[in-house]
Image (cartoon, rainbow, N blue to C red; front, side):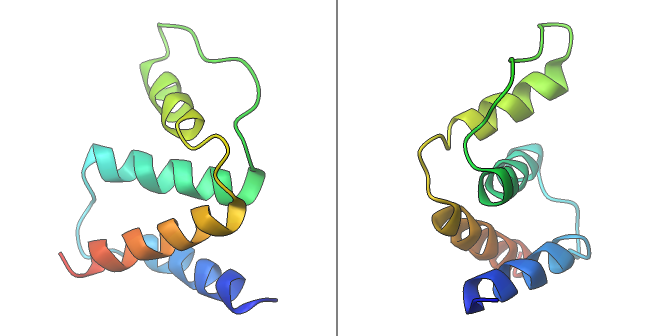
Length: 86
């Protein structure tokens, strides 16, 4: 496993134990970076207008379309570190 992957795995565990709950904006960023890092570009249909949470998650992930999985991992790691220092 590469160093980046190891750091990403550590960051995913640290994200679950943040000192305070991140804002909705940061939660969406964490979600979208995680999905881009682990699954690549968004796929499937956009949820309907009655599913606002699913739609927000889909849109946040879709905003990262074309971002490499390594770049998404690094962005996730950096965001977790920033949230730990808040």
